[in-house]
Length: 181
Ligand code: HQG
Image 1: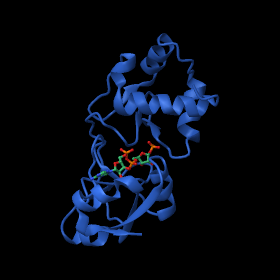
Image 2: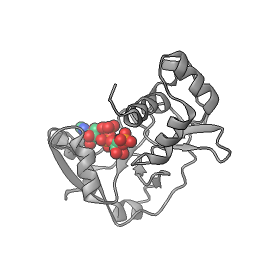
Image 3: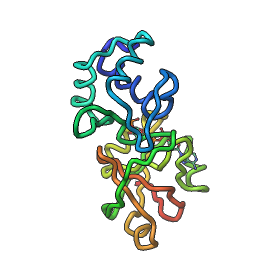
Image 4: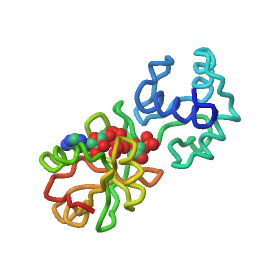
């Protein structure tokens, strides 16, 4: 585990709440929520020392606001990034004219042929600025940033969503909407 309990807990929660709730024996509801009490109990049973105070600090202090509590504080969910099918109740939103996608240079050839695909996730993730996209791309290797012609995609009837934490999401991006940034 990472020595920083906030980072370690954030990674653990990303895994559990986006991909593998079953790994600690919890279930997500149709909208991705799970009960805080049960989550804490199951984490404890699995040997993960996460108390309510740490959980609150992870949710409140997270650089990217990956997690959110329900209004009454009794439930928690990941704001985006799921591979399990959940309905986040995303509302279609008008994107800026240009969005950015950061990827690794080794994926470029394939992306320019087949476009951006959601692969394991529910959506393709796009950023409002090139610097953020570069950071996302660097997670995978040598980063390259693509410019996405969101204005033309909208004109062609394609739909965008923005997650609670400001990530732009869409189903896929065809090569004709992509350019080197
Ligand atoms: C690539 C982080 C080949 C795509 C970030 C990416 C984000 C293709 C990788 C969030 C392809 C998927 C998501 C194609 C797409 N051929 N490669 N046709 N189409 N790819 O991790 O966007 O820290 O699933 O370029 O901030 O990197 O987790 O997606 O490199 O918001 O909160 O396939 O994860 O947020 O990788 O990152 P990922 P992503 P968190």
